Image (cartoon, rainbow, N blue to C red; front, side, top):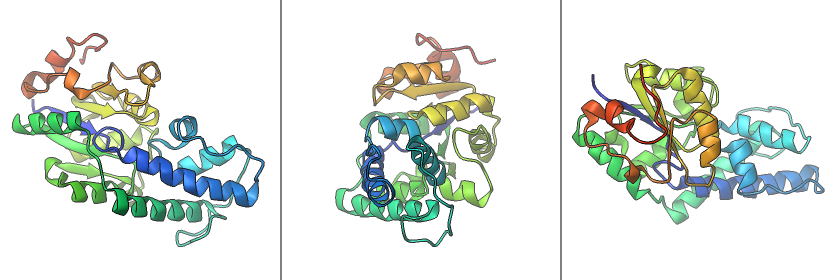
Length: 254
């Protein structure tokens, strides 16, 4: 059976998570300044991980505002102010793209090694990212050709697919690869992504602990937690389920 691996993007392949964090900080500081200056400001570590990491823009915005006991109308998709959910999302996206232009995209070396090793061994690779900018990042970094399927925020929206942590996201990602979830390895760094993959019934979930939340990744369903993909041997893709489970913490795939 061909090995099938679904990769998240931000925080797994690319260090765009740091750019996303800066963009969220900028837009949420503006929002709170406008509607409730007394509310605690957006924390770039705790609030990012808890409320927006791995989620669609609208879901992340609602969750963060709810944490400050605030609500805003959904608005229109063309809104360009921070008085609606859509407007905040659009503003954040513009800020993110500006940072992307000026700072570029840093790729994680361990992810590049894993991608190249898997590709050389004829593994089937898919991207599963909630970001609507995932395809742009792939294009900028020359990684598009690595993936047989791409599920990003745009594709999910076009197909009416719920975002992470809903299991529908990884169920659909597996389907795009022509696989069942239980036939796939999922590589994630976000709690919402791990929950989505777990509830979809993914065969094996590998959590990457780049942010010091390894125990939370494991608690929420990651069968294996590593600080770097270099800790795993992806060289034998035909036997990857069998070999990777020798790692402490792996769970058997039926």
